Image: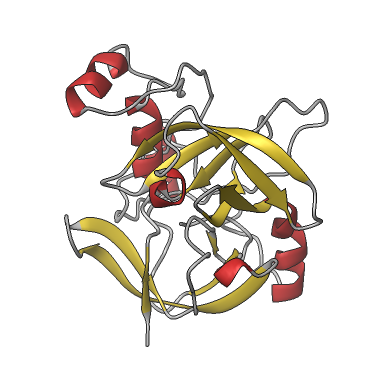
Amino acid sequence: ASAIARCQSFAALAFLAAALGLSAVGGSGGVSQAAHKMGLRLAPVSVRLQEPAQHPHLQLPAELLQALGVAADPAAGQPDLSLPDLVQAAKPAVVTVMTPHGLGSGFIVEKEGLLVTNAHVVESVGVGAIVKIRFADGMEVPAKVLGMNTERDLALVGLPPNPQGWPHVPLAPNGSLVEGQKVVTMGSPLGLPFTVSDGIVSGLGFRGIGMVYRVQITAPISHGNSGGPLFNMKGRGVG
């Protein structure tokens, strides 16, 4: 049976970062007031996040995107990776997020250490709490919950400074998924070490409670996969 993954569009991720008072490219001066009105909990941090500008289900030609100042996907003309090559490239940036109450998965999207997971993975400890991050090679480091949006089930976590930069995965532009496309999930299902599964995109659109834009997939996922990444075959995060 297909599983409805909590893979919200990255437009929602950029919106969350702005609403949480995090610095974003082209950021808004009113994000603090917006966050207050929305009742979001904030942590005093400053994180830079590239803000996607496309609507999650629009496919726009590259020429129009360029005219609008929106970067097209640099990987669009590249061939797909083999599954082993994709795993080798992405694995260092896929982590286990551990709290005193349970664990989930996550993935690093910026070399400065910005990490994405699901809000329900860290909701029990709250914004500002310190959680433990375990990498696939067994290394563990502390990290801080920067902010969360429980309605969209998204949370941002910040890793400590790393002079060499943290391994991270690139994100695909919004609107790059189509039904039937092959995708790969990675994470820590049932608390097991790093695990990979693949499938296809079986559905796209606004669905479910709250009518959130979701990516429905056939790749097997289990408890513990929450917060883990969904990749296209070019090795870019799509959810």
